[in-house]
Amino acid sequence: MGGKHNTGGPDRSDEYESRQPPEEERREAIETVQEAVKRAEQAATDEASDAGATADDPATITVSEDRFDDWTEESRSIETNDAARYLGPTDTTSVDVDLDTIAPEKIEAEFDITLSETTACEDIHNSETNTTYPTFTYSEADEVRESLEDKHGTEPVDRVYDLMNRWKGSSGGEEAETLELIAKKALGISAPVRDDGKAAQEIPPDDAEIDVYRDATRISRSFLREHMPTDSDGNASVMVHRGIRHSNEALTAQLIDNPTASEYQFPTVSTSNHSIDVGVGDHWAEAYRISHRATPDDTAIAIDVLKPGGLDEGEIHIVGDKIRVPAAGLQFTGPRHQDIASQNAQELFSALDAPSMYSAETHDRIYELLRPMDRAGQHPETTAGTTRLKHWFESCIADDRFEEASNASVFSVVRSVLDSSGTDVTLDLEYDEV
Image 1 (cartoon, rainbow, N blue to C red):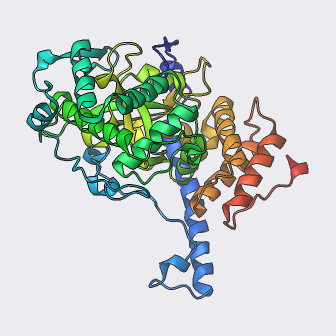
Image 2 (cartoon, rainbow, N blue to C red):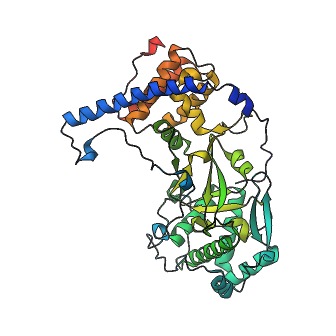
Image 3 (cartoon, one colour):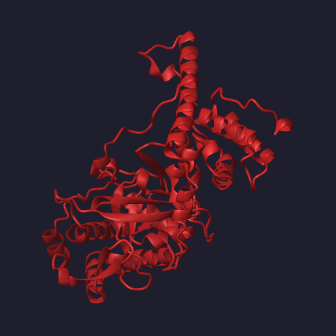
């Protein structure tokens, strides 16, 4: 994840607020677009019905679907992972250790370590979010490692710890792929290793490294259950943050499809690193920063628990699949190292439904997010989304609302996205008309 960084910049939230339209005008503009979206959906439904689709055969009806549950406000935090979702046999090895059997007294007895005493850990404290991330002391971390060596041997433990060290320096390349592959096999994770593990180093056939990793997971989860904050029901969780450098396009497409969803889904590889420090997330973000609550059962490795010191970021490796990010936790940060005020992503994409009420800067930002989405072949999946995008573009052209971006460039990108979407929504304008 990299080290600590001063990511603070001028607070321009007041400036952003001053550019927002009066609420009544904004609501009227949004209602106008929503009516257009409803007409497009109805037309798609009618067309599907004419083609013989029925209510008993919904898969044949090519209409917009809301892909997001209508969650209540109280359920916006990330759901606790069901262990059955990622336990069980993998392609090469069976997971025969019950990772849910991680009661502190069991772990303490098995590894001869101390988990439960608060004085047995040091803290990484994030003053901005008032979050404390407990870790082992240096001597206790050494005892954990020695206990793992006693059980599994020095060589496989050295190997796993060396991979964790290298991940802390750079979470990419063959070391990262190797650690992800070990995690995938150790925990039966269904999500893929990045780049299909093409650069991953060979794992010894005796699976010793896999066994080391699995025990490191058990220790991590047991420690976090003891020391994470708990809610009124006794459930432990902590807010974690991740700057999104890849897969921005999937989030952009979801925001176009449903800019008022209660949550969004972020796909990950077998494990991904997150931090309790929001500044670390902001530093690495190339368009978005996601924030969500993680539980001990979401955890693959609590790396800064097992290895205190060095780059103390409160880093946790999360089991991969699709992370459910509450709408309030999806933040647009802009390109890396550019001094712009961040804002909630839904606030940014609300401009699609009321383009006349937002500044040229806002529309230029949306265009900059569409470009990589187009290059990646991503697109909205619903008629509502493509209709929204079409209306936004044509309204911006009519009112000359782009500033940095040229009309022709935006036209090319929007047309390409609409063409690849598979919907019947097309632009009414031609290239020479913009």
